[in-house]
Image (tube, rainbow, N blue to C red):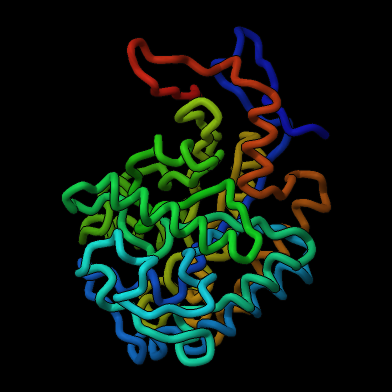
Length: 351
């Protein structure tokens, strides 16, 4: 069955896929994503205590996906592809603010495996079924919403150096996720050949962001076992597709699990698939690989999620696709339901 919007009576106001689509995307950052100076950064020992065996968790996660025959989208921080670096004085970091790069250590994959993991990316590149490798932010997980002076120049440096680092291991990303899930400067993505990015999860919690109120809304969604909302690709700029997340894996560490048991993640995942099948939309499930290292039950839970996904695929209810695959099919089909705002470069697809 082809992946294409089905034309309803009255035109393209309510496009749907011919059947449900499921996607898995992974923000692959290791410690790069936990050194943000604005968010109580973790040092290496704190990171290892919270996520024991995080590097090995990435290998185990890849093995789970391969065993299930599932292709996922791995959004990778470019720094992981470096064979090593000279730390804050490394020339590849020259265009970034000092406060951002001062925490990056000198080392290589052997001495600093939380920072540099070229060998894993080489295994990921060679894995079957094909795993899509996108870019997460750029070289260092620099926040695109930072208030740094000359921010666009900084982001161009971060983006180009991230792509350069992945090119060294023969990777050319076409999909992207924003650090902290905070969007900005979309036009730069098209300048560097990106065709798809992951937008934030629809709903109140996402709009509230990293606030106490946002945390409460996210916890309540878990406690209520709320069905994640199916999403639809939206063309932000010509040829640039936003494929929002439907659900992020709620943390499974001991403190969170005492309030919200692991079972809720499984039930919400199943409901997300059911909703995508019913509405013929996309269920886009997202996580950080190190989250599975938070609990001894992390991987058994993830394997149960994959079993539910495989059963839905075997029934013909859903097709499992990557970001680039969805964007390519949407672009090939065209955008008959896309409207263009007057006097602007903004493109918004109607759901």
